[in-house]
Each structure stands twice: as C-alpha cells, then as structure tokens.
Length: 298
Image (cartoon, rainbow, N blue to C red):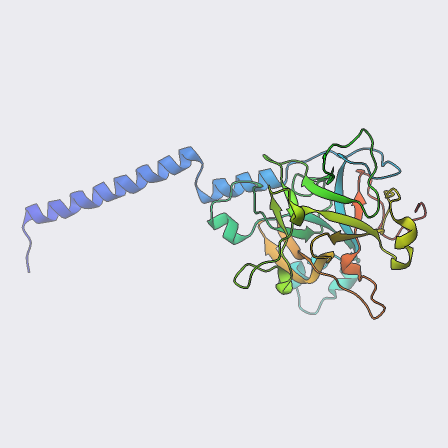
C-alpha cells in the first residue's frame, strides 16, 4: 500500500507535536522541581539536615531537651552487606571491628517516594541506623503527656511517667506513634506492630520509661531518669509492648543500610527484656561508649 505525500507529512507533524508536548512537560516538571532526581535531592537534604545537641550532658533527662535514642547493645552489621562486592574469601569481621549501637531515625521507603513524599511528613516510617550524626531525622524532644501538657523549666523525666517523643526538626509536630493494625493493615517488621511519625497526639503516641532491670523498677518508680548508657526500657502505654530494634531485618533505603524498628517485647528465659528492647537517650553531642556501665541510678 502506498501513501500520498499529504498523509506522510501529516504523520510527521503529529510526531513533532508529540515530541514538543513531551519536552514542554519535562520543562514544567524541572521548573517545579518534580523530576525524580530533584525529589531525591530534597529528601536527602531534609532528612540529613544537621541539628545541634547540647555540648554537655545534664545529670537527668529534661523535657524539651534535644536528644537521640540509641539501642546500645545491637551490633552494626552493615559491613556484611558492603563487603559482598569484594573477594568472597576475605574475612570481613577481621577487617571491620565490631561496632555496637543503632539510632532510631525516620526513614523513607520506595513506596513513600512513589507516593510523592517530599520531606519528613505525617506517616513516615522509622528504622534503626548506624549513623551517629545528629540530624533532623534522628533528634527527638521529650514532651509531657499530662492533661495540661505544660512542662516547667528544667523539669525532669521520671520513671513510670507518660511522655511523647516528638521529632525535633520538622515542618509540623510529628510524634512517635504505634497503632495496632487491622487484619488488612500494614504490619511492621516480622509482622509486629509498626512505628510511624504522626501528627496525632493521642493515646497511641504515649510512652513510658522503665528501668532495664525488672527487679529495680519498684524502687526507681517516679524517680528522675539519669542520662546514662544502657538504662531504659521504653514501653508503649496502650499495648504494654516495648520499643524494639529488629536486628534480623536489614534493608537498604535511600539513606543507607538500616534495620527495622517496631513495638514488640523480646524476652529471655527469665522474662527479662532482651537487648533489642534496651535503649538509652543521648542528650549530648559527646557520645560515650555503649560499654560504659550506669552508676548514677537514683
């Protein structure tokens, strides 16, 4: 079948028009900052913005104090994933000394990126990262969960007292929240209760600090919480479960290698909380070794 010149010219004009529309659409997206690499750059900048901590740590934890939340007894296993590109016969453990301590931080998943996430917003998931830098995604504030919600100047956090964990640097007030999902809902790592940042300041966002030694919880109840290493079990008020680091669930996100975080109580044969549920607040930029024993317990 042969076509006349008029038909061929018509197809050629249609192709030019389509290419022009695609080019104009691309220019509009570039001007509005909606291209994939532009969105990724904004996310990395928003999550990694430095947030200063106090130079010197106080004796006790105080409300409205910037701090990080670390799980000091969990091993950083990122060297296992980074070394897969090398020789399979090399001993990775001898070249990479063991480092303990993971920090709770907001993260971003591919689903959030595809959904148009443009920063630290309501609904962001959380994970545990080995990065120790104090940045926007890993610095929190202690907020009192009393009826008045007013913290006095230099008021200390006490064992057994309910509080909120608020992200210190975000466009809106975001709180650490865990709501048990329905049967068709989204579960956390290993089908445990998920962790999210939420604007809802309700009962599912309330937490309670307890001593890591169950036999000392009665005597330390309502005592100020000292700012030391390996001390806390952070319990979710509504479920009674503990904040936990899922060290068996590692993944690579936009921000590096991370392990999951959920609300679940890991316990041993003596019904004591396992190392996945032992946490510590880091209120100072001078991070101390997780091996240091706590001596100033009230």
